[in-house]
Image (cartoon, rainbow, N blue to C red):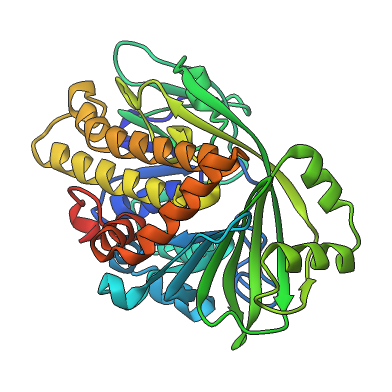
Length: 411
């Protein structure tokens, strides 16, 4: 069967942080939205932000915080668990170069928050349930996409056909919807795998995010505060597949010793508190963000190396801009799937996303080299940045999301 075209103005495929945020932005403005999630159910609201930390975390900037606060989602997240960080330390594990950033230097209360992904989704779920124009469907897998001259049609695995003026792909880095639409991507295999786990440290993190650039890739200790205890961190170690496999096979005690050595023992003894999971890393950028009746957002449009923790924030900015453009079109009586109007979103986001992808690639290549001259240059560069106030302030503005023309929801 095919749903009545009047039922939905927008169908969003993908119920993670990015897709659910877009549904909130549109639903809050009274737009009829259907949110399709391939998962059988949402996160467990009873356990999200309670007890052991979720393995998947995001470093949300103050700009992303303002967006979620405007949706009345941030208070629920804060009640569950968010960890502010007020300082960042970045150093070269193969040399002496180091740079540090502080919220005071940036003129901000905090540089950002480390938040477990299931905490964000649980808070968004609660908000969505209160929006009468948003319908959410779980276990809804898309099997096909038809792009006729009028509105696109989604074919679900159960045989159902759904039609709307606009379909939004928020279904991740390997986006099936993007592939069904025939949109190509430029891919860069980083040659690295992210080893992810959670640890307890001997000394408290003090609200500091730490990252050491080691011979095989960056090691990040992201601060987590569990029930008032600051001796917890989320680990993201980007390294070679062989090294990641070796690390994942170690006993907890041996892995803790490797992590302690990698971070220079600055937090004392390190004890893993969860399993170690290996996630492949690749940077992708879609050749285009829109087609008539279709828009890509978040990882479906671009996926980025996690060394700067910007992936979730770029996706949040995508949906804030897209929602702003869609609501503007709606007020003018323009069809939400109008390609000419959708390109306004693409123009506003593609350049910023491309610049961040290039920057992360440059960092990865620079810190991945073992050439003595380049090693010396990057150590001098890090130390030089640490002494140059204006340059540090510019970098902090970039890292906190204060780039270019912000959508109204993020100001």
